[in-house]
Image 1 (cartoon, helix red, strand yellow):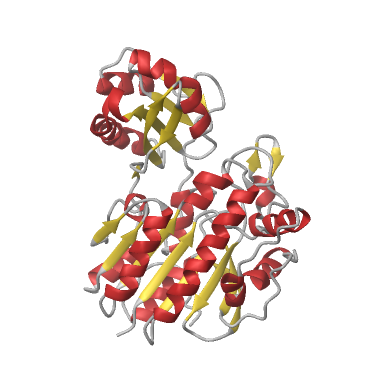
Image 2 (cartoon, helix red, strand yellow):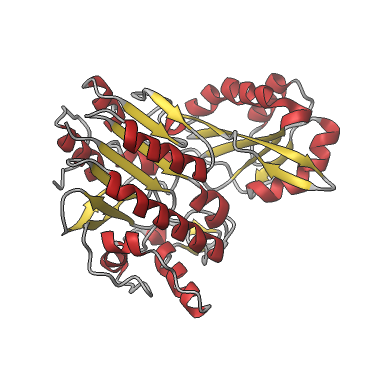
Length: 397
């Protein structure tokens, strides 16, 4: 029986979203943002062209041009895989919106976001955090970059023990706390207790952000991030595969995004470790299995930090690892590589960018798939595994 692998390279957008003008970084609309296209252009201008031959052979360069009309420098291979570009309809450029829609369920509501004011959170939310945490206050209480806010508020956090609470243009409340001063399990318990209240408000995620270090040596976030996400409003491809009796393996933050619904096991870690987990599942996953993976560091380490060279290097690392994975897939396996949104590191601000995403497919030969819906990905996996499916979308098999 066939297996299906869905690999999300987080934030690797390819421009061209028709509604990009309705989404912003600060006061600047996302019109013209193009994560892959602009990385390729910037690297070429720096004399270090982007080298991703495996992704390009699957159709990455062709997908960039299809999505946006942009010719990505050095991505000019004739595709040997199936390729297309997908457009999102959910009113959000965030992680849950993109992943749920890829899994067949567009978001049916407006997400609640917090204003770009100080304080950002309403008094009742601040009071709830303080009550659960057992503190007399919180730090930050504003829109902030995750790494910057820890550097700025870390010393005060170590003195007071108050949690560092911040948000962004996404529907999210993030809480950072020192693993030794505050305690990792205490942080997880705090987030777990307040999450249901935030979910009632249609805030998509409460994210625990543990860190270590000190003011003298600097602070570093650890690998133990956990997203407490609102549950999808309908059955996703994970539920469909699970109900059909097939194993569903989650790699990375997939378990958090889908609240572990329809998921049999979860493997986490940094991207290098996640690639090891993916390789293990290529070898070990049973016939009929569905493997759903997210590689987050494109987004968290390089996109939000507007690090073009780092993003390019990570793409090249992923490409080299993918070249080792593809020959080991079994006959009949389907592997789809896509993304959940953009995060153009050449753009203004630090937030996601509204873009189309690539859909690169190994296992069905070379063909142009054209412009697709995000939901077509979930429908295709259901068709490949020959299971009953109630989600939206149309299979491109």
